[in-house]
Figure 1: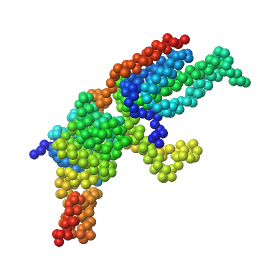
Figure 2: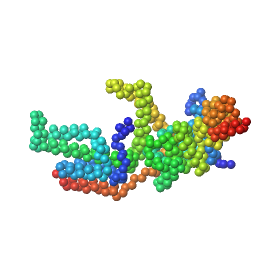
Figure 3: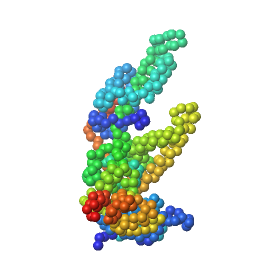
Figure 4: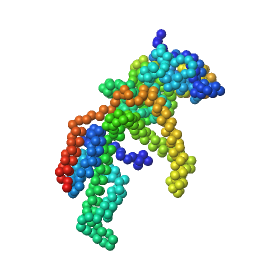
Length: 265
Length: 282
């Protein structure tokens, strides 16, 4: 059960991309989303694909994991592709059969949009596949720190996130246990109509909630005893280090953007 | 005379302040724990022993009486300072693991107390070596056994270099092996430092390790003394809902069967020695 549920799972490794500062990776993905929109012709989209492929190679992530990451959005990609294919009515007709008419511009736009989607999903997957969730949390906390001025509880949010991440496996195990316990008592969760199955989930959720609250209470006590009194005056055990390679990866994006701007129509 | 570290005077605490029909969780408790001692507080479920733990580190404050820690009455001003000198380990191994990995969890209390980074790294390493968990620095909690998690919790507590270690039923959810690991760790720590250990437990085997035992019943102190003195009470303890240590139980049962044994035995070794020599003593 645990295995199936893990999305954006971290794959341990020691590649160039793995060793990058989580902040650099976050900024990189954020900027990349904008850079992608510069591309507007064959050559620029080609360069985008090439760049993405380079990053994949640098991350040493097996293609299998990336394809897995693409699965949930495949439908969306195909859908937008078809949408563009049939509804863009520009340029010469390249295919005409009964009521289906496909224009060259439609095919082109469809392919472009699909490439755009794919590279975005692949690069964000690489971010989550090469960075531990806790590093992403740390990076977010540091990057969002300026927002404290506007009363955004950045430290608290980051702590909440890291505690939730830490408790995911614990609660998964618990769910599994409760499910087995209820099944042993004759509850049937896999057959019946939609409504019956929804009803069968209730005896699963209630014990889970009760125990989650109990855990939360215990955890709060344990944290208090260990001297937790908010973000003020805390030091950090996890250090993020920004080194030359982090600057380089951001610069590579700037170069990419410059090339794309130069080559676009 | 050793210095006192914790002392309670006529402490009474109730969870239901308005309702006088409810028996207070703790009733006029008084005792003193001295530096370097290992004190076990035993009692059956609902005898008030966990409430006692919470009173000792200021999670709860008594309605009457005073709790003194290091000679000073515990109050809101010295609360955090006191807590930093008192490590505490709770019952459920999962519910006190805050960090994403073992080293993060050990560092948690250090972060809270604003320890500088370089010192933090050293202390985390040293504490993990002390509980023999240094090979698991980067492990995530769901890959550890209960005993391992409790040892990490102990490491987290001692990383702050406290003078008191408070174990609140720290072994009760563990299997025998995990329990042995944890108790072995505590024994080792005691041998290396003059840590004061207060263990709250219903496991009398654990109480045997202590220098002094306080027996709780219905929120009151029922008895106090060395483990020998306490366990001589035999049947009385069973009536209080406590289990006798295995060896003691065994010698009672053997005597009931007519086997000639001299006395109640505290440890398995004593019992075995007595048994195999019993034939010669005739």
